[in-house]
Image (cartoon, rainbow, N blue to C red; front, side, top):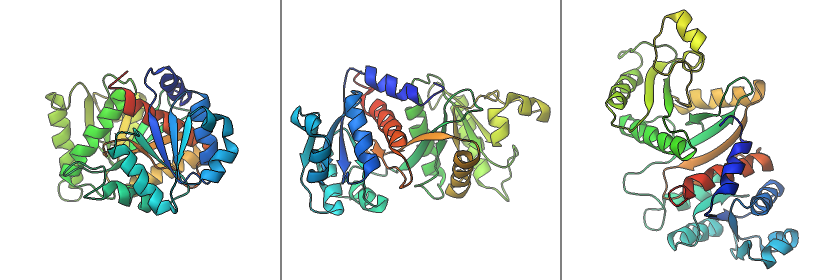
Length: 304
């Protein structure tokens, strides 16, 4: 896929239509996104809280049960109720409305009533459409996981590969990003982890994929740059996804690409039992709609 619009087309063509529990949909962009998701037949919606705002805006959809409304008195209560809906099998994914991210994730991470498997972790994945790149590029982690340890890094890779495959990338090419291509145990211990993951991927431990690192971003995504530097990477300058060493570099890359390079995005949090759409406060309704489509593909692909 090269364009985010293709996410909408794939989600629309899915036979199964997942149900998204939307936590406190009080803001205009969230209301517009869920309205569009229903109109484009991407998902069915349970709005948790904000009954008056939802019913007033989307009377027709409420009347035909494309959107149902469950009461909640506060955003925190709405988060708890939405997680309960998932646990009861009534919702297939979650979406944040006008609620703080930490409030929603607290409900997801609750050890007794939440949505995490034992020793699981959450990682944020961005799907970026970059005008100068020839396909969508997945990035992790720019928002949730601060500085992964070795175990978390492996889990991060597995979750990223899973999402790539759900988006139709049969043999994902994943770059483990750093400032150079050299393993430096003394100054950059993460490069040793990268070397280990690269070797294990080559044996087939993570399924059909290509993983290489450490690599700088330009080498990972530009075959000419790799040739000039004399680097023979199996990615061949065609990375489908990039894992960053920590949140600082990932977030800086994300912000730079959206500001200076016109990158458009979809994003979701992976690692819970269902996808969680956690948009930024500044995201417009189109970004939220793309994110819903990606979550829809992730939650339904096993059944479609």
